[in-house]
Image (cartoon, rainbow over all chains, first blue to last red):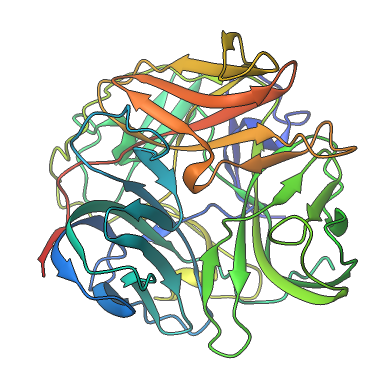
Length: 152
Length: 266
């Protein structure tokens, strides 16, 4: 086997998987820094109004991989305000469902076989949603999510 | 690009001056672990209906790893981080019908990523240069690459690599683990609080032990309205059942660093 293992504080022969800085037997969750458009970033979205049952695409990144990659998003909502806002989180993972005065807003972070997208969706029929501000940080990672897990 | 130290080594991301690199700009540093994928991909399993926790996947790792579950749309091929209940323990990932009682028996498909992070082993990495900003590069285009078996190390496709300094990998800053000690909204609930020591808002994934029937030791992601509150450096996970555990995995990656920022006004 060719490769390296780097660990601090443990015998590399007996180290546990969670202790490695690098173990070339195990893939890192890597985001390509050279991809254009970039596979990481911060979205800052302001929405003046969005009608009931309508969607707006806030971000779309064509990832360019043959195999559907993996991703993570973290959001901040309502960004820049007091964190003590009842049931709303200020930071969270993945997509976001937000109860607003105008109705239920869903901010969906989705990875398709060709694109990564963040979509604002007023899923409620209770009215137009106004004055929204949300931030999403995102990473598209090269290791594939769309391939069958081979240890099954 | 690489510095060998007395008891380890560190690599910066390609093009970054390692003498000035922020912690989050390193590809790795032997002072702390890096996020590796122990198991990942798409899984289809036949599950029971009626809100029962069905075994979805056996990872068999012997510790409770951090994981991310993704819904999968078989028509569009789209993945989205799962907002309902999927739990993980030392051996299994379990699926619970969305809504608690809905859902019938049948085949379900999800994507899963299982990482080398033990949710039940508290850990804090040192902070060497926790500058949240990108410090700039040195233009150096050499680095370290390890291709997966059967692939050429000269490949331009990052999916052919296990490690590559032309990429960024999340770096683990801390794993906070413990029981809630702060009184919650009722007498049988407690809040779990943790104060991190980074000078910026880091990315993090919160988990709590699921308090369903026969679910001790099973953790799920706190997604959406389950009650995460941030206040400065303090993260609070709200209303965990008395004597149940919570874990928060912190990455060194800043949330709001100004790199590749997209501003949308509609």
